[in-house]
Length: 299
Image (cartoon, rainbow, N blue to C red; front, top):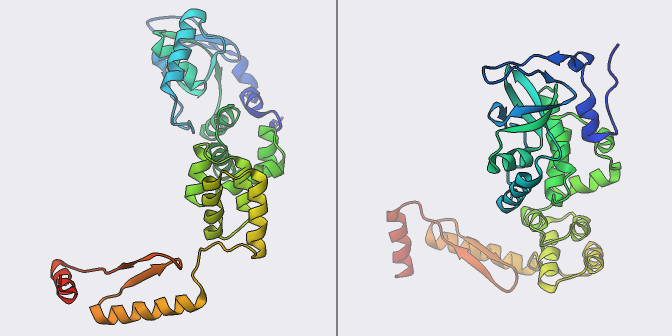
């Protein structure tokens, strides 16, 4: 009988979706011990036999928080077991619980309680991403990137993804849209300098230059989400001067100036202006070419 695909129950569904044969005892012996490791039950496993999850999407762990967790473990022990997969005799890989694993090492433990599960590489990635999403301290960009990886690397549709993480499709879409914002805005959201509400208001304006204009104005004037939404509507309606481009007549003058300077210096000159300030760039191909340009400038 084929297994029904587990949807709508998140990580717990993935972890419990194992073959019936995995409920049998698996005899794992070593010179150091001869106890049996049983799937779907809590086992004591040596930390030295566990590898970190190669598909772990979260690369940074707050060291101070790890230290605090290790102190708690010294006093209370491991309250929630980690989850691992067994891929060879006395060899395991973490599926979830890397913070507990790292903190246990800091606490000086040699063994850790663990659930043993069966999972292929794609399931490992999916489990790690879903566990990552379910953390409370993720910023919106981390969540967006995890959603994107689940869709692209685990071949999930938005509806399936929503069922797995307990979110409706519109929520998934709103997070994914954040990844279309310019890098400067994404970084601000990641670093909690800009809320997701602000970012969602900005993304309603498709032009990147206009988005950056609203973003900079938001930070400079500490605008509320409502004010940003209002500003975005004005920009879309063309009633707000975003100052992202110079007037047409001035653009023509700048083009003519570039042509004149390029002819004068014998190299392509770049002139940029926002209507008030700008810069002129004179490239050179070699030291000899630089000296030629300096001679023209009489420097």
